[in-house]
Length: 331
Image 1: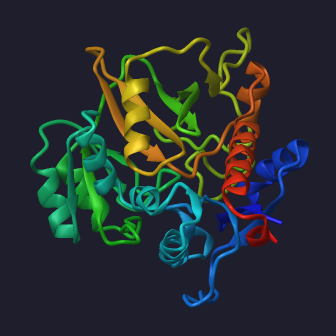
Image 2: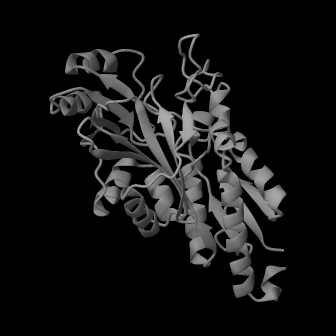
Image 3: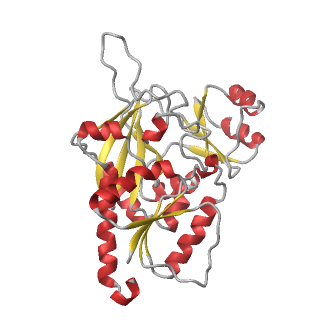
C-alpha cells in the first residue's frame, strides 16, 4: 500500500499533522531523519514524500539531519518519486543567502544583507551600515542569532563576549533594520502552491516568533522564550489582552502572486513567507519557512486549519501517484 512519508526530526512539530492524517484517513508513515543508513542501490517505496526538515535541527541534537535529508531527496528524485518541498526547497531552508538570492530573482525585495565569516569580518560588515542593524545566522530557524544593534561598538562588545554564538555553518549575516510604524509582521501561508491565509504576528516581545504551539509552552530554543507560556501580549488590566497571532480576514496584496510564483519556481509546495512594512509603506520580505508551523489559537479563532489543509493536499497527491503507477508496483 502506498503512503505519504513525512521526513522530519522533531516529533512535537509533527503531532498536529498526525491528527489531521487520521481524521481525513490518509495513510502515512514517518521517517525520522537523524542518523542511519541510506542504501543507494535500493529502490524507494511508492508514495508521496513530504520533506519537513528544519534549519534549526542542530539545536535538538540533529546536527547532520539536513545533510542526510539532502541525500535522501537526491535518491528519491533519481527514482522519480513525488517529493513535496524537494532538494531546491531544502537548499533555501538551510541558507538565507541562497534564499534571498532566489527571492531577488523573482523581483521580491529583501533587506540589504552582508554575509560574513569570522568575527573580524562580521564587524567589518557592520561598518558598512549607516543606521541600526541586526545579525542573524545563515542557517537559522526560530530566530537563531537575531540581535538588534545600535552601533558597531555594541556589536564589537558582543562578539568579544561569551554570549556570541556563530551560525552552525559559520556564516553570520548583517542586515539593515527595518523600522515598522507598528510592531507586527505578516506571515503568508501556502499549501499546495496556493494561498491559504495570512497571519499578523505581534512583535512587541521579539522580532521573529515561532507560531507552533510547542513554542508557546516552553521550547528552550524558540525565540518566544522559555517563559512565554502565555500567548498574548501584556496589556493594562482594563483592556483585553491582544492575541500575538491573528489570522487576517480577506487578506489581499499583490505580493501573494509574487510569492506564489517564487515557490513554484523553487520546488516548494508548502511554506510560510514573512514580510515587514516600513514607515514609508514599502514591503520587505525577510524569511521563507519551508518547514512551516501554525498557531492553534489563531486558527481556532478563525475556523481554519493549516495541518488539515496539508493532509488533504498530500492525500490528493497520493491519489495522483496511485493513478499513475501500475497496481503491482504499489504493493
